[in-house]
Amino acid sequence: MTLQQLESNRFDEVIYDNGEACLVAFTKKNCPVCKEVIPLLEDLQAQHKENFGFYTVDVEKSVNLSQRFSLKGVPSIIFFNDGALKGKLAGQIEEEQVEEKITATLGS
Image 1 (cartoon, rainbow, N blue to C red):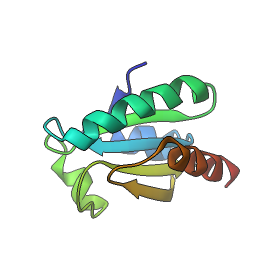
Image 2 (cartoon, one colour):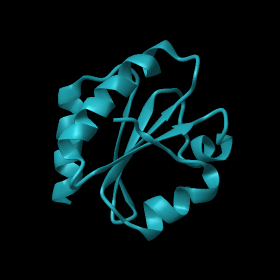
Image 3 (tube, helix red, strand yellow):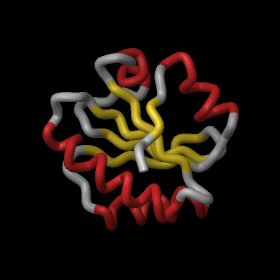
Image 4 (cartoon, one colour):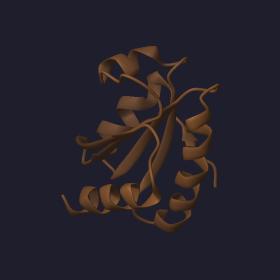
């Protein structure tokens, strides 16, 4: 499964208005760590497709979003539930870390 690409113009609608539990991976095309993290997230997406959304934002196309969340580097993953920010992960991550954040986000 491919992560759904979010642009600045749809971000607020999808994340805040819809209010679903989800994660947003902030990445950029030439980032080697991002290229490792995306397949991991795609695998998790297949396991959680019924109750959790998976999105990606290209920070080079949506600079304002990376500034809004004060992201210092990529990849950065932000977790949301009911329009509220529930947690962040950054850099090289393991599947278990993402699973823990998904569980915590769904439980809140």
